Length: 330
Image (tube, rainbow, N blue to C red; front, side, top):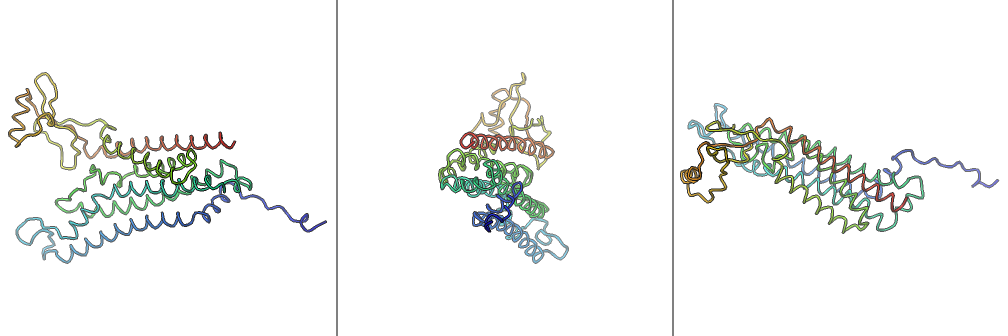
């Protein structure tokens, strides 16, 4: 019997381990680039936090005060002011990073092989089409989840130090540039980015076109939630002089008429001064001030509702991607 006949067949790698190992070798440059972006984001936040701490300790008054010595007025250091400015857009940067994972990692992992035809080699080996797609979903999803976990924790750590100042500029929980980076909603966006990237790749089967389509879809979703996020949970109404606390998220304000009709502040724009603004509202029949707002206690309900919607959208995109792949290739 020939030597070939005596060879023992090599058992295929079980589960996703084999496809994942191949995937790591094939697309290591894209994966290393994604890891580098995550490390860069973490390094920036840590560096800013250290900068503020060093500058504050160097300029602190003898009594431990961070105000101008002796006069009671708050005087932040340049390091603190600059760091507050940078971190005020931390949430936007995290959303951008999540989108980049979908556009430049998840989508191209699939579209490049479908476009070049190299997927046939993997399917001819031990991996089925479903396993092939699952591996290309699992790897960027795991990378995004792990990276975003560290990034959110580091961002919250850096932001918490700045909240100790008397007037933390632009770092309130409801700020559009902060909100996505301090809660679980960022994981929803990251997983949705992976799912949308995979779906666009399977449907379009062209790398550049699928990347463009993924960016368009993710940008639309992020912009839409950013503008309508306050509607995900009912607001609280304060009447008369019962104004919300400083950390509340104000949504609408105006006056109520005797019949209970709402007259909003925007109905009197432009107004030259607070007096003319109030006079305009009263001329329209307003008698009682009102403010609709989200208190700080609404942070978690808003975060969880948005995260849930994003995860449902991600699951639907993944299911549709598998369905399209199965229809085309059995």
